[in-house]
Length: 478
Image 1 (cartoon, rainbow, N blue to C red):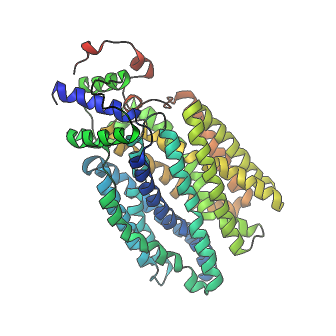
Image 2: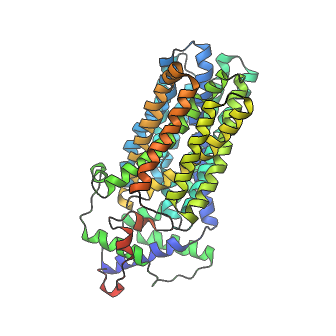
Image 3: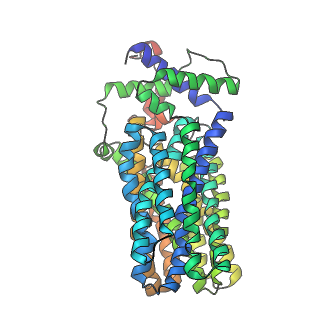
């Protein structure tokens, strides 16, 4: 890349980072939010499927664990391999194909006659879900400026979290209208219908400007930035340079560009990865414990089957409110202190669920656990994306999703039925509470603060102090 082209790239990134939320940004957010709603419905059907089929087919704890983790195992594998595809072929293309994939195989699941074929179809659908999962917040991190990044991701994730109430509503309605052998199939049929949405994504969703710059497609980015600036009422300042972005990209020029999975296991990305993946793992343990087993757990506490499903759905809505709050708070006060407070209070809510037996106590504890526990999700997700440069962001977020979902959504979720059998409901909630405490400690000791900084800065191999060092633009190697 020539010096002139490099200077224009830095200018475009600087201008992109200052643009507030515009009409086009809202359209992008809406498209990504609807994608997450569709995926949330697809993933969320597992909770009532476990509840109904456990009774209908007399499932053992091993069967329940297998069914509860089948789609998650597919997600882990899908998201791991999708990271390379996302960086190579673009965010948009992988998103479109991923949605088509999981919608198709979810619809087929309604025709399945026995447990093991249901497990297989959920696993295959999970491959597509895994490919899709990291892309919305990855795209947001690459479209939205540093001032609003955490808030926007949190609003998006709040919609995702609240969307998990939809399978609860559909599942409860199906249980009230149909015999069990038909009722569990209704959510699968509904989950297959959004395959038509891929047409809308293909036509309306733009590609990430930062990925386009990596491919040398500067003209496309220039047109996009100019359009966004026009919407925001900003002038096209072709001399505007953010010193932090300049220093970060200047540093990338002097380093050997590393690509592939192996590069995220080298410093400084190794320590960043371990810290950020740990945060997400703690959130995933909470998420899957509640999503998959909360209806079953609350049913053992005396809730009717339909009420157990609906209460779980209500927790999702409360969690969505917590997610909106953490986005704003983390943008204003920083990712680290806000995440720490959320983790501690989430653990408190889980302990309340473990120790309280009254209906009022369960509701209060459930809502506290949901608000702060589910509320950690968007901050954990965006924190992963903020650790890597653009050429590694897909791989880093993909592997991070895979690790967190493997540990939290497969291993932990698989053994929860055994913990439930051995130690009862209390043991499950104490386990989740401990996970929040254990995984937030490394953040406070080794994690970098990423709030109000561009992703070029947070993903640089330079420390924040080095980036802040004063230098002359004339001395920069453009």
